[in-house]
Length: 226
Image 1 (cartoon, rainbow, N blue to C red):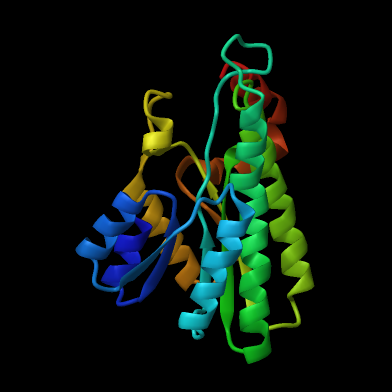
Image 2: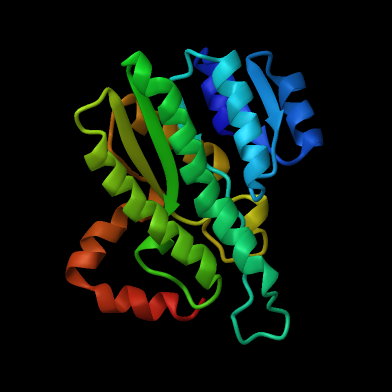
């Protein structure tokens, strides 16, 4: 949906992803999209794709770190897989940091306006019982976004963090109710970027700030059930 929103506003978009089929479909649907296959859990592929992107698209000005995987079993569950720890951390945290570093090495010498957008979650503030590694990576993304904003405050590069509620995507299929539609989430993200906001709280995530001030214990008890 983010790609569609960007396309409708006349932007040219570069997309990285693991599924060649999905990437081909995007290029067929949108003539403004250029896709690069890349498994974000593999550092070499990330570096190769970013080398190609920065060379072929030297005027790129917006980076959206959106990809993530989430495994739900707890550490003590029978179906917990040890190998999943590395996959989640690499995909959700290491890859976005690597991409950000390579993006900055391209845009900073140009001294042109640019923005880094990190897609985070309310789980960064209030983790749930399941998906502990996923929650930890989102907490790290929140922390990195703040630090990076401080580091870049004297440069033309801005940093935005998007805090999402539960969004209706394939990753959240079968999990909970009252999800925000992917289209509404994408619209809110783009509107926030256009407004130049440093933090974009989307949908029910907007209630996090007042809840953290007045009733943090209630939220913790709620999230313990999930």
